Amino acid sequence: MSDFTHEVPGGAAWSFPIRAGRLVTLTALGDDACVSTLLFGPDRLDRLNVPDTLKAQMSACIKAPMVLMSDRGVALASVVSSSLDWHDCLTGFGSDAHLARFGPSSYAVDRNDWKRSARTGLVSELTKHGLGEADLHGSVNFFSKVGITDDPHGTLGLLTGVSHEGDTVTLRTEVDVLLVLATAPHPLSTTPYAPAGVRIDVAIAEPVTSDDPSWQFRDESARALEQARRLAA
Amino acid sequence: MTTTLQATVLDTVVQAGDGALIRVPAGGRLRIVDTHGNQAVDTLLYDADDIDNRYSAFDTIREQGAVYLTTGSRLLSTRLDELAVISDDTCGRHDTIGGACAQESNVIRYGEHVRHQHACRQTFLAYGAAAGIGQRQLGHNINFFMNVPVDSLGNLNFEDGVSAPGKYVEIVASRDILVLISNCPQLNNPCNGWDPTAVQLLGWWES
Image 1 (cartoon, rainbow over the protein chains, first blue to last red):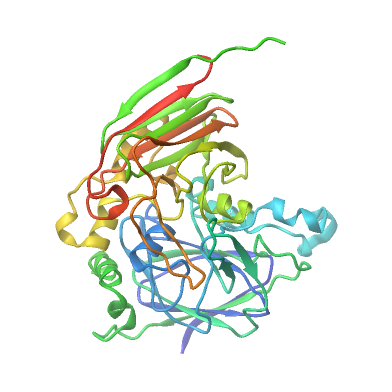
Image 2 (cartoon, rainbow over the protein chains, first blue to last red):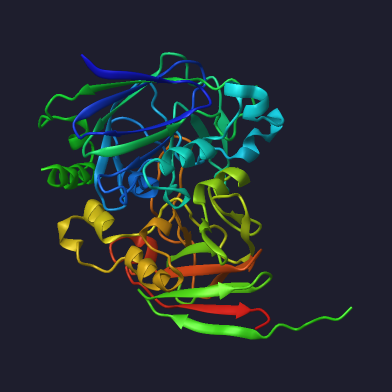
């Protein structure tokens, strides 16, 4: 049974503190969704560190059952399941410059359809928690895939048609976290403005057992989870 | 038209495991020389007038459409301002997704026995303090001379460096910037050839 459900429409942003031991399922409400996501630990100073997350788990993308690690080596959350095997975390979130191709937009003219970038939405949410621009960090762009080319430059580009309405990813919070997300278009998107929304279902997680896939994934994943266990103990 | 010759205003050695905070004015050139080869030089850039306008690895990667940095790479801030451009590079490519070592991330990667070893993050914080750069201002950095290949299957690896003694990288500041360097003390992976060594910093600008 879900503790609560919340829908974030496309082109919006949201933040919420979520306690340790919850399952947070994101469900894409349309094709080619992009949920640019930041995570903070219990003290709001420790935060998601994408480079550490990648190098410790030898991956250039986020997928189950990786753990999302903080600056201080704490597993903030584990990716317990996902209908996709690649979530982008190398290209950051979009700025207003990436919306310029859609022409000017303002609340005065467009009311609730005004177009705001992920960055604007994320900063707006951060300010509610006493945080701000200084706290922006590398995001995970759930439901987006950025393909990498095996060439000397590591050329990359957004792949479309990879994610669809109904795709899901489920995170298990390992400590109390602040979840901050935006549903603006991916910064490399070239399609018309139609960002998908996301449904968020929060439920109580089952106790972790010794055969948990994230604990079993790599020694590094288990060590980060052990740091989280100590923090939440 | 008059030409102003720029004298060498900076010529210093940063020892293994040490750091530096250098203000480079707009147009100034900063060269980092890998004196022994196989060294990783963890580097952060800041707008000298506003440290919240800092280097952004992932904005830089996305806007150049490539993972690795080399000559011509524009080093962008979180506001998409150009902080500097790599103007010369005898190494070939540099990493910006591998991040910096921390005492805590060392524990995650290598085990509890390395917890009290020296790490880049502490060097960043020690040298950044003079400019008000603290934990909140530490973004994801550049690793000059480091080789972190990624592939189309989504794998990431650490490999032996592609650098060699005397190879260098040079940046030109696009505005007044602060360059925060940690000359990585890492002993546990091949980024330093298991032997951290000194680097030389050379700077040319009107003092």
